[in-house]
Image (cartoon, rainbow, N blue to C red; front, side, top):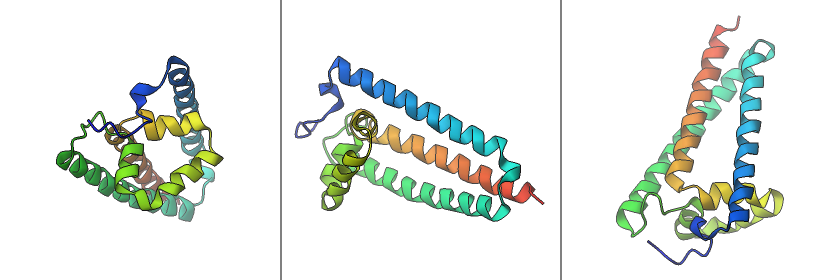
Length: 149
């Protein structure tokens, strides 16, 4: 495994892991609330909005799938393992030209939340979850837009 990443998730102490667990619970609760509100209020959403949302999420899913394939190819040709490469490590090594965006995001968002996504979760797990959720929501929004009259 590559030892050059000083923010590997295994280096986090108990307090940091607890904070990331809280951040994960907040994300799960907030995401669940947003999905619940979308599903329960689908009749009040306009058909063009649902259609746009569906196509947008499917497009984002395709981009995420390409990034996931890129991560898997990077893992195959490097000394990283599937469970060892965090999204931060991938971004640092493969997207170093735009790494400043990640640092800028840390100035705007809760650091433990950002650590959960970029440092703690392996890149493959993070991207697989994101791709699955956005694909399912995209197809649901398209189906909901076709059901509305």
